Image 1 (cartoon, rainbow, N blue to C red):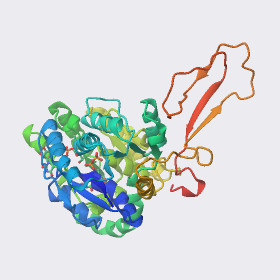
Image 2: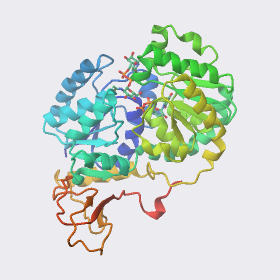
Image 3: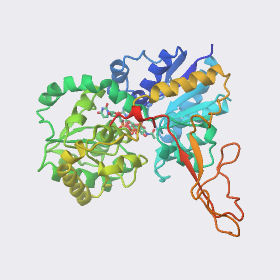
Image 4: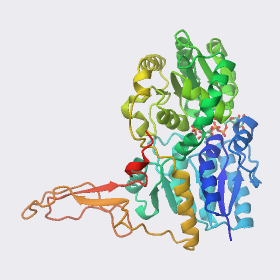
Length: 439
Ligand code: UD1
Ligand code: UDP
């Protein structure tokens, strides 16, 4: 049988696709793991294959670093050959990197369906390369695995058919659930290795182009870290992009009181994340992980495509302004205990996303590539309800339609002439069941 082709190329893609690969193995679905080579340093790639006990990718496209156009085009050129060689049933990629953009485009050009894991996230900022990548990937995908209801709504409002959208939860929650007990056993050793005390240090990561490629923004963030280091020890596993930028702009003087270390493997990193007082980051995955672990976050961006993480004030957006970062960070350090005690059901997922995605992929293959229409009677993903059901609609021209969908599941202009009814579409996720709470 033709395989499912899973394409990844950066650190977070391995972490978030590992639960899908495990799910496919359990479902006995044949898959082919392809690595684009966008990340190639051991600490950004192979270490994660080892930690997650994944077989080395069957194909390494070895694309390496370069401009956006060069990197995307090279992945497309090389992946086109691989798709032709293996004729996969479906190509699957996760997230918003250049690897995802290239995989999406080349798949549809080869007339192979593309499935997007983590579909529907939106920052509404088209200057972010990731926003362009994820929008294009969603536009051409045949299957959208939206991590949350919020993400699913974004897709529906862009005219994407609800038949292709599945709310699965985010696979990062699966990864955390799988590994947190192992990480708990490692924590004392990791803290003592770095001379840190539990709940008494700040963890920092930084790698977004908008922060690292802008001298002024990067300097402002580093100055904030320097000021915060007077209050708490700071540890900073640094991404190579950031290390290069600090050197290029001559900003290392601001890091003299910060413990700057090489990027960490997943288990060591989670040991630091789960024991820090707060985390300062511009990473997407770390916002999700910290929120799930109830670790206070200060996001070094002015927006987030993960709005769920701002619930209960767990995540505060501070951008790149020095004073705002310092103020937000000190506020979050004060709220650390309160946030840890919060009790809520995680809107990001229940730890079963990988399994759900694998089962959906299996069903699609078995159904000979026709995506099964969900049965909206028994397990509706979308419920339509008249908000003012029972009230008279006669003689009124007033209506307030929130959203309506046509037979293909696409949003459609309202046509409720003479009605005073309001129509609500409610998205249901697969992890809405009472017994799947992981708070
Ligand atoms: C990429 C993604 C970003 C994701 C991040 C995960 C895009 C546009 N960006 O950003 O969305 O959040 O991965 O970490 O796809 N480098 C090395 N060694 C490596 C890889 C990169 O030294 O193994 C250096 C190179 O100088 C390279 C720079 O880092 O030019 C940036 O790498 P690149 O993959 O282009 O972008 P990231 O910042 O890693
Ligand atoms: N991570 C890691 N080691 C580190 C920094 C991050 O294992 O030194 C993990 C982190 O736990 C998360 C993922 O890498 O799961 C996030 O990757 P990154 O911040 O590079 O990318 P993003 O999520 O922003 O795309």
